[in-house]
Amino acid sequence: MAKQFRIGPETARLAHRAMTVDDAAAFYALNSHPDVMRFTGEPPLQSLDEARDALAAYPDFDTHGFGRWGCVLKETGALIGFCGLKYLDELGEVDLGYRYLPEYWGRGLATEACRACVEFGFETMGLDRIIALVLPENAASIRVLEKVGMRAEGEVEYEGVVALRYVVEAARGGETK
Image (cartoon, rainbow, N blue to C red; front, side):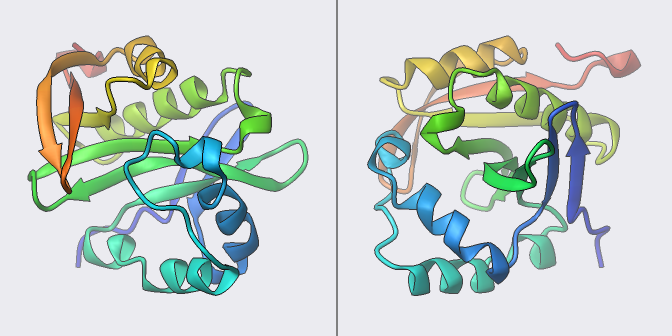
């Protein structure tokens, strides 16, 4: 069995951990919010039961040893979103993805979490390359990806949606290129 990374990186303001069904209310609030879901290419969750089912059925940690971590704001202990790495079977790539509740936007939390997850992927997990898929109209997320050292590498169709592919690769000496 592959090593399990159920606890992700810690930053000055955030702790990253695997979500459980106990997080269903926060997960539902996040994934049913129209502003959050606007640029995901996914339909919003319709109920708390659907959120529980999604969390209970989330296979990534068991299948690949890692996945999207819940982001807990250390100051309050609240689960405010998620950020993490996910293996995309269809593309054969590890994807960086994140979502936060709107009241936490504009505080640099996404950049802080994404930077920590990229470093964790290279330094702890030994990855060579990490991608991120983003809708072309999501200018705020594009800025976050660029701030963490990712560069545009064309378009890709994923799950019926055309997205921009951003990439960062590990370099010798632990730096990214």
